[in-house]
Image 1: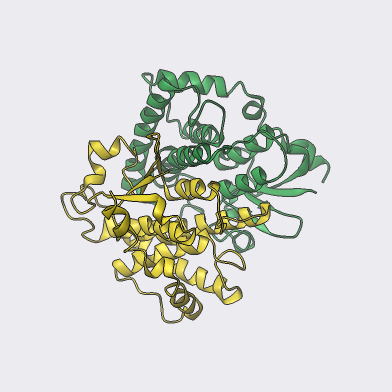
Image 2: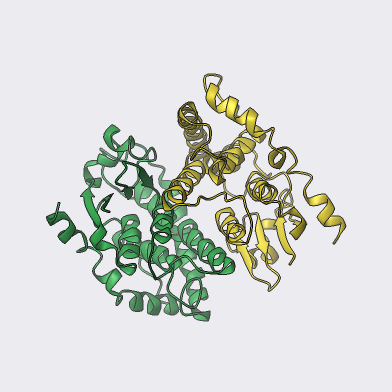
Length: 220
Length: 220
């Protein structure tokens, strides 16, 4: 079974799915289709028919079903056979991992995205048809507070949600990838977050996420 | 095993968990603790220690673990024993239900919440310390477009995500409960959405959601 992923290789949201695919060793079952963010292809009718919300990535199943939203794609991948489990085994683990992943969206990744699209040139004037800079800067500040929150969490435990690597780590990684793109560095005093992020970047799934599409595309 | 739910009985986000509890017949295992939204108790240190994001509802397990975020709470409830399954059985169902539930947040429920907090008096001046009305009105318009989107979906199928009732329906119901509170009616031309919502309000889980805390609180 071959799935397609419609994404933009360097996108922070696509990174979440690419990292999850690599962690689960599913890369060989996926072909990547590039949607050019810089040209705003994700806001055009062809793509909006695949995903009403106009966001990347989107998973396309062999039967033609499109599954948008990172959390939905990773739920799908988790429900396929095979370890490791990234969203928990027990009810408590599942609850805590989903909570921390959602919190990483709410307090870090999504605010940085709003900052990028509203208080910086974003994807350029052809794509950013409406901007609200005041809201964008508020969201940047929220994301900085979020970094301090996750720093406090990581002072207490080795991973974001539990004692092992999970989707919650992947969502924080997505946030910090986006922070890097918008040049919003982790504050120096957030030492636990910095140390954790350095460890995360040693993981092959994170380090090699930009190259995983190449063999699959060659096989297309 | 008794769980606690910290919520505000008439809140649209708490409604999602109350409806899920009733659908799964788990009401008797839950005690409700009221957090007074109107007094801003959800933004005070006591509550923020339970949930950094300051949102309701929060599930408290017997071991003292707090699980915030509706999607995380419902993942927890789904992982406990017992039918019905609200988040899908097969990988495809799980993916589609999670996608449509997230889409209902993104395109309906969350925008109405932003409209309420930013472009109306919201919870009052003591709680709404910063407002961005322009952003709020944009989000109201986004929610209205969202209603047209879900109307189009419901013209094609009986439920929001699949052939059966699921968490995606519950999230749209949450959005329309909030729309009712802020007096944002479903447009007259959205006949399929209106008919579906009328059907949903006949479900005991939806109709009786405000009363389910009474017996549990009396037993407290």
